[in-house]
Amino acid sequence: MSIGSELYEQRIEAGEEKTRAKLIAAAFDRFEARQFHLKEVVTQSQVREMEPRLQNEVASVRLEAKSLKRENSGVAGRLRKAIRRVKLEIKETEAKLQRSPHNQFESSVSQIRENGDRLVDTATVRCYGSNGPSDSLLP
Image (cartoon, rainbow, N blue to C red):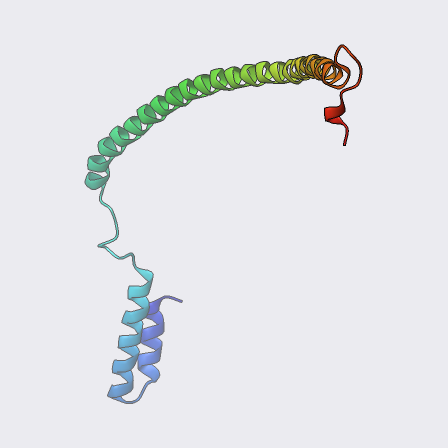
């Protein structure tokens, strides 16, 4: 049943004027609740005005997205090059480290042997000299 029909029936059944006024006010409230709020409804002319602005905004966002995509691909390329360069440096450093300790160890061993030989020769000369053991080294 419509709001008008309900109001009519309720008004006929209501005896007092005060009750009738309340019924009319309630019917208006229900009617207003069903209707669109005219301030919130957009007119066709407003839609036509907003459409070009929105299209321009969409176009600018698309251009910005393309620009960012190009920029990202450039950054990605630079990062790949930097990663390759760092990996190469790591491999070179690992190779140096693998060679370096061995070379250092070998040179240290040969130095120790040379120094040891000299020390043994020096100690022998001091202890025995050319005439035998030296008394100066004995306690």
